[in-house]
Picture 1 (cartoon, rainbow, N blue to C red):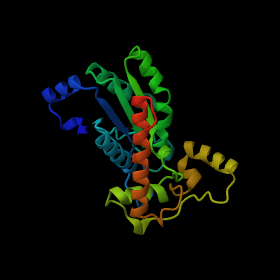
Picture 2: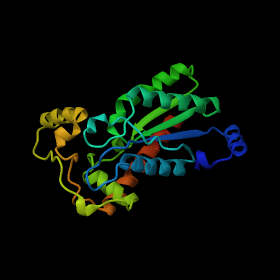
Picture 3: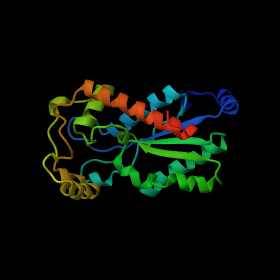
Picture 4: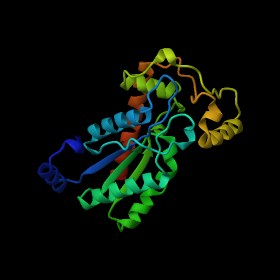
Length: 240
């Protein structure tokens, strides 16, 4: 694995010519994550996931797109870009990678609000490139068994595994869905997509108070293993 931003032009061009290179673009967000996690949480986690997968499989790692679509968190802090902006930036980057000889790109997403602009991105780029560019977009939380949350047990545990910038003394319970029916959870989920603070009251979905570094390490290993396998399957067409 090489972080593309640390490479030198002659070496990188030679490397791209000598073998089929695969690029990875992590996409996160800057938004509130309760009083105990930093606003960079989504970007921090997806960067770690992408870094490990790129290192394990020898992919080229691009710098993380740290801004995403997080308007639903207002009036809590969020630094957001429009869906069309995010889609355009990723489209331009993938096209630029193709122009430099890289024809396969994995976009790894770390924020729920980015799902819509990433939808059908592969088909759009396939059309633009006249079938010369393959782009695969995955959200890392789809590759873990535990149900994901927002600043709750899962996300807080992952942050404890990768960062010292967590204030567990400030962690408080948020929206707890235990005991709710699937229909009730779906309904409040739709509200959260539009107004997260209204749905959760304090901006937290789940209970972070019992999160641990050990649980985070287990989840991270699971994500990297499962998502890494998925990426390799996309390249070879065969399940490992």
